[in-house]
Image (cartoon, rainbow, N blue to C red; front, side):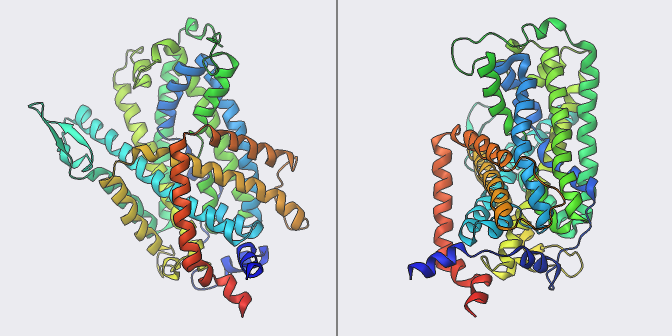
Length: 490
């Protein structure tokens, strides 16, 4: 019995089987994404509000003007994982990302854990971002267009707001949060090509906004704001000095997470052996340049001390220029950034669910492909309802760290997968090879684990509780219905 259980938990899918499943059957996804569509997906997932918020926090509290070094260090940590993702995405051009890679390397049980973890990462991430999107849209309509939405329709039932007479009242529903989730889900159901086009347009808008802010801000930089470039440490670890730069790197690291969502679209990429590497590493490189340029201008416009405790440091920096309209432009950039993050997170969510359903670790209902749209529309529809309910009715902002811890766990398993496949499948086709294996994957594992350890205890408890629920589902249903398990038994 024990050996049978152990065999069930460790059964793996071969690379040939994974690739043949992807290219055959009636539930086949359509390959339509080129390299630049994949790069745009990566930028859409990475460049969000973190650009406008984490930069000021890291500079004011930890690194000072040397926050640009923090961004560079964080990008190196992401590059370790990105190189490992690129190798596996080329070898296994199948939807599902880290879930699929784990199934091929570490077995069904680990694959289930990471798949279940990714469900939480993407769903909670999209819902959390939808709440922030709602807040920025409400502010933009009020301050720019003079449109005031009813407070009861922009707050969840668990949130309160102040009435004109000073009394407090509870909200009814966060309607804008629901609408953006429904809109993004509908777009994803209609087609991946259409979704990629809309994503590319919105990415162009937010990059244009960032370019304008950086371009205008360059002319109003004050050199004295860069002095000292690395502020002297206060005597406390993480407060300036090199320890502050490292702490700042930990803070801004989470501005980069999301590029892994590119790999979930591997089964819809043209020439994935080449294009996945371009999409993952290309988007990381572009985002790194953007983050460093933006951080350099921000700390040049305002002394880092002045941003301490500032809820809107970018607006404070823009006030140093004679162009007040830049504030509205920044808000528009944040809204555009949030929109693409939601779109790409929901894309990744539905593709992981689709892959798990294909393997019958989840009901086959979710892997049905629409005959015209060629998308897993039932998975999209399910998460449209689930995620919009989270965003519209629950105060989920405190769950934001769940997205980070889930992403880091996925990064670690992908890095481990590269090491395992180099030993078990040394002759498999690898159009892109991660350099210096096992050093680079080990550095990726260590850096990601260090980030996970820095998260608070409540975040770990929520992760353990979610995984415990997943274990109940796996042993009660998924293990007995596994497609691979039934085939082996037959």
